[in-house]
Length: 447
Image (cartoon, rainbow, N blue to C red; front, side):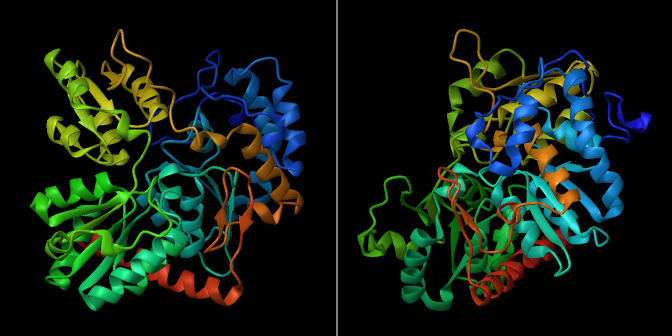
């Protein structure tokens, strides 16, 4: 085994400034054995038998599976992970030469890394599906754990959204377009493409919405699926509150609900229509928490999936890339309270400490209930899944279940995979790609 790979820090320069400490346990809860697919159970059994979860124990175990795969595939292999991934998965992916970034940067990397024929994502399903939509025909995309999903995405299942979207289209015709957040399935990205709309991320939603409105003055924008990002984006663009209309809460939306149940005058007046979805991580934050930290001299920065009042009360808001850059650029002595996913804040705190910067989780106020570790569904990507995915790929035995194709949907509770017929999948991919390419075009032009 090459000596350069057994170090406890990454073999290359890490853009996230993270490091693995030998005697620090990974912040990663073990999954029960029955949560692993049959092909992955030997890796899980081996991992669960390790005496502890410290990096000095896990890394030699992981190296035995990952390094042969890296040597076998070379530049044909591209590893990707999102900032929010549970525990030290982000550190592990970086350690093996992969990229850790926000959803926009991950989409760009999958699109631009022309030499890689195999893309492996330790992320949630919609991120891997986005890579599959942008991939060439000779590239394959794999996800370490197909059950890693997003609760917000699940509040906007295509079978529920598309009939309501069809009602809106029938009423307004070409005077409505769609803006689908990255946290949606390929089918909803395809909806945006078919309506002449686009995809957005939290870093560029304002750019994309503004451009769509310039191109089609007077047209309404259906924003999917996060009501808070949609409302914050509208407010940033100066759209008045009475010009923003939220559809019913997605968690209680009746199956037979129709747009006729909306107030007709409000519907006609609205410039932005919000799907009633939300992120369970970012809706735990409130204005009282912001005030508590600010009164004690901390600067507060929040993710725009937080409610509008929280964003307005904070010192600033932005995407995960914005928040990470804020931490990296803060001068020594800075004190930052951040409102976003727990694993992200934990890693940011660790990176900041070495530069004399203090970082806290906004909800972590003494005497109040603990805010929790982070997004539980993302945390389903763990070391056994990473080891198993790469080892099975190297052996040519990777289960088709872990391959991601445009239009796929996964029931994250049962693990059931629903795969589109080929003709439908090609149509879905074509429209979704239009929406993604439109996002990239607008964003890159603005930068």
